[in-house]
Length: 466
Image (cartoon, rainbow, N blue to C red; front, top):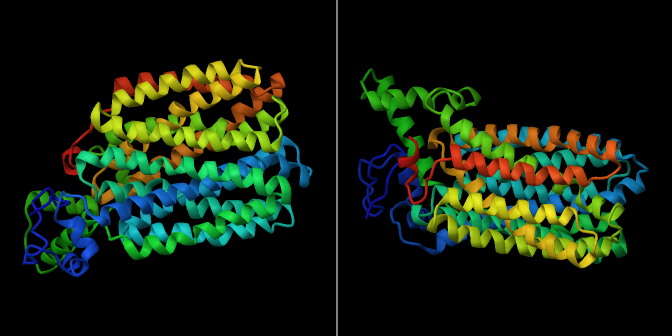
């Protein structure tokens, strides 16, 4: 039984650790969990451990993002902040978080995917109590910045580990379905805010996710390293040692080695990778711009303009997360059945229609009905979005490329775009126009996906790029 290596050749069977197997892979083949994903396309318990680990990471990301959004009215009130002051503080944190978006995946190209994923989540567990104990808004911003930096690697690391271990026929659905755990984390954040923050204050509420995140121990103990990454390291070592001895290598190895030795930002914009980079940048930037307004301002919008209590909008977030979970699970099934592009477009159009109806609704029942309806497409489109950026780049720079793409997208969507939202709110006295920008962007993204995004459903990673 064999699989495809990072350089496009058949890998030796896991029970035949012969000379074709590099020294690093020989070391990893000693472990049953690595053998379970290195030499077979059949599903094993290890595949499910990897999927669970990725889901946990996304769940913690959902708790982190949503719980800080939900408590924003309380933080603004306690520290006596204006809306622009609070926005500026959060944008400082976002700037620091951008560094984490590049740093962790870049590091993963050098040291592997598995351990860094666990480190991300462990740091999240340690830093949440620091944010909860902040005596001033300045300290709160510093703690929030470190949290952003620590957890932002999850955007790429978990999806890369899944993409590099799961069979191609299932890759899209498992990335999307594990991505849906973000929604469960958001649901849990809504429950925590409604039950804990409303009764005991936001500080106690922020501590709860930190305790839950101790599950990072599970990730480190059950997940193997990516065979794609291991084989790429062995190939690099083999070529390097051959050249050091004065030997020669074939043209393919020589070209690959020259690229692999210069991993980093420059590599992502070289001619052979640039088309993939531009497609991924379009998808990622559109995704973050679409999400930016809801992620940052929906609790404040519901609180100040729709006059919902903390308990009510927290309850809405519980169902918001559950609907998003269902949407991502459905999308996960669809993207491997009817393709990435079609599923992308359908979810974007659905979300755009119901978001528009939601903004214009004043009746409470309609706000709930349309709000939960747009959650399906609004959160569902993240399945094909993160699948595309996880699979479109070569193994040698998959981490660095994902880091560059999502760091730029984060800056565009979460740092620059809030200036548009706040400017519209300050000019009109309402967030309504800012929220109406979302369906416009979703339709624009659907058109862009139709015109520019390639179909990768069912393809091995080396068929997509090498």
